[in-house]
Image (cartoon, rainbow, N blue to C red):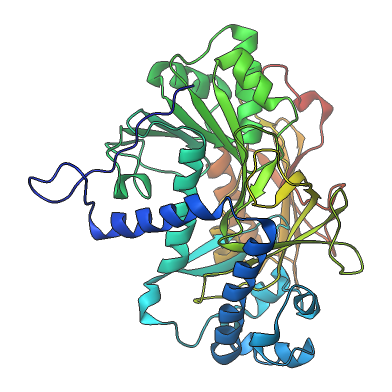
Length: 459
């Protein structure tokens, strides 16, 4: 596959080459230039640079974030300047429960004005516990730079049509890809479709739109490929497929090549921190994005895992001073790998356990990959954890953990939102539990299918 040219556009009248993009694009290209160099640094140099930034973050958090004011002493660390990889293992791990219950204390009392505006997001992550997190403008900028790195690695042509299938409702058509790509590059149009649509409609839509690049949930992608192979329909002109969320099956890259004649690349991300690792173009490895996150894989005793050992993922956002998430436990499990043969110094995740999703159906025969909006769980009821189980084609059970039973009115509101999101008038029962069990490997599934007849051959 030939690398497409990606010349930036110029915002200065009469100036075509060399181009000078608008200020936001200049900042983005400046970061991307550094990322192009830093990916080839050796692992030791990368770790030194990470620790340099980590000390700045901890110093700020100790002074401006109430939750962290006693952490240095609790960890037995004599000031932020003394932090190294070994002493940082003593820093207390941050759980989702702490974020949910002490979110105010995790927000900085003041954030440097140069870090930009603060935005808030809501997620259930991989534990089913709804929480809200804040992100600074600078942290978001670094997240976007990694997305541009991803496009560069995979040879994505920004002037092609982009198709996005995800859970959130978005504008179905846009004249450009939006940030970060159009901050510096001329792009083609972008089309978007809700993943709540049936897989039949999604595949028909892809065949009609004929995008050059597709972004889609991995579980949804696998269902689309199965249907595409079964019915002999495939989108023409598709060159690149980028999967996210959910566990990618080992043969997914081969399926995309064989069925759609396109290249597939996996990503590992979370809503709170953005992209954490990107698949190598040449190999199956996932490269940690070490310039912006400090990711650890820990054993049951809290010690760092060696390559090949599976452990829980704990991650630190190195640039988010608005709500520093320091040693944040995601609820995922992963396995570190040896250095990648591609030559990049970025550390390797050889495997990720726990990202999963299951297909839902309704009695009409529609099958789809469900994800439920997280905001209404917080807005309607004080639910600490939740899970939706499909017991039969028309029957759902909402399992929840809370300090009290939901009222009839709360159940009615939640049921209405679920039916609206899943686009069918399901019968819904509510069951309060003391705890909701995790799946094997430590992953929590917010939707599970318990009826064996729900599995379909065409997705």
